[in-house]
Image (cartoon, rainbow, N blue to C red; front, top):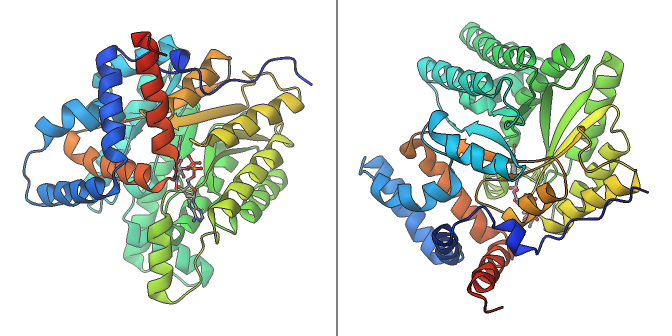
Length: 398
Ligand SMILES: Cc1cc2nc3c(=O)[nH]c(=O)nc-3n(C[C@H](O)[C@H](O)[C@H](O)COP(=O)(O)OP(=O)(O)OC[C@H]3O[C@@H](n4cnc5c(N)ncnc54)[C@H](O)[C@@H]3O)c2cc1C
């Protein structure tokens, strides 16, 4: 067993070193606010309304939630965040999150922006991975029809066929650019009704680029009851095809939407029956991948302390050094700093998703962050408790 000690996630001095006293005060105020579900509910509804009516929100959002959860309005504007993270051995995953686009020009523009992020990371060790959502490169309806046509072995319309070819070439361009830059790229997982098309694309890209090293990573959401099986099947296909897998494991972000849709269609929900089942499969998936780490590279995207600790223990039990290049940890900017910065201090490979882009486009992302923080039992209060502990420590009152 490896001798390296395990991290402590309650070391607040280490966790919040990167925050000035003013930033710490802002974080305490923010987490106190988003810990109140009614406020998040009302605030989200008002923000959606303001977006619809094109009422400017920048004055309220820029110095508060945006400054806390986003890197900046552009790649260059995120530079301060990227450098600050790197000073503490935390790497960046620049995340231009444009979702739900439909017009071809906007899909091309998103592709060009992700390409710019891949090129900005080329040769810059502060960046760990590139990332994109296929829904930023394709109309969602098309992704659903592609998945259905495959399941039913039916043909796409000619128009859809052409649009699908354009989506494939965008995805191909991003993966090729990443391979050329000697980088790695994560393909995010999304709603189950568009995920089959995304999985097929991701597996095609892995088979093209993961022969010599792991360039492309697909994402597996363990809040779905069928995904541990999918992970194993994906790995078998990679073995048969003579390429390696890259996998990002997450629990999954669209639970309410998935359940509502299944109920409205009268079909069984793809989501696990309870949180304990999602936790069980997430941890089982990590163990399964660690046992095959020579063939499947792993990035665990989670804010769950117990799962992050299990991954550290699993690495230790298998004699993997904390900085083994095949294992990564990741959290979102502004969330779970005690996990991120304590892992980094112990030499683990850890990165933050750093969302960036114009404020208007970031608002749906920010609303989701606030809602997620209210729906994740215990997470916000834990975060708030540690932030307050650090305030007291700095004042010399703890
Ligand atoms: C770096 C990173 C990348 C991510 N990428 C993606 C991505 O590509 N696609 C994506 O969908 N999500 C992604 N996420 C979000 C992720 O899926 C989770 O929504 C989020 O991280 C919360 O889960 P957790 O493991 O951090 O912690 P926890 O707080 O322990 O778990 C909360 C999660 O558990 C599950 N859950 C909660 N209640 C129940 C219940 N009653 N029954 C069943 N399951 C339940 C839900 O998935 C919920 O989000 C990413 C997260 C991170 C940190």
